[in-house]
Amino acid sequence: MTRVKIDKVQPAAYEAMFGLEKYLGTTDLGTSLPELIKTRASQINGCAYCIQMHTKAAQENGETTERLFALSAWRESPLFTEKERAVLALTEEVTLISDHGVSDRVYSRVSEHFNEEQIAQIIMAITTINAWNRIAIAIQIQ
Image (cartoon, rainbow, N blue to C red; front, side):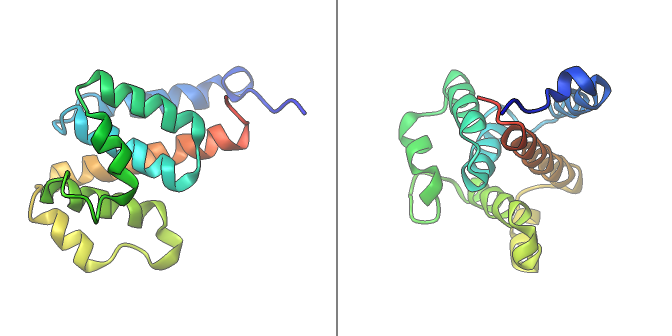
């Protein structure tokens, strides 16, 4: 069955999503952290297309294969910094927000490493990739 091509039938919606991507490109989160966010959220959501895209982009930005392989087990892996762990915990809680929301513990942990502006940028990065995952899965982008 052929699925709707949102970019063709609702180009303004797609442009709005790309507007979010353009905004995210202006943040001061660096190149590695956003790709870790995108890859981890995509793993949770089971979006193969986005996992492939963002692991490739992460590697092109200098991320190691070893860390990408360990990403789904970041809690047990010594390869991630405390700052990255805080962001990955927030990524998981926002992605799985219907389970129990975002805990004060996770939010406090992120606040130890980032200012309010950066936290807002991180939340927007998590929210944006979750939207892309849902679009990709719904219309079966491959």
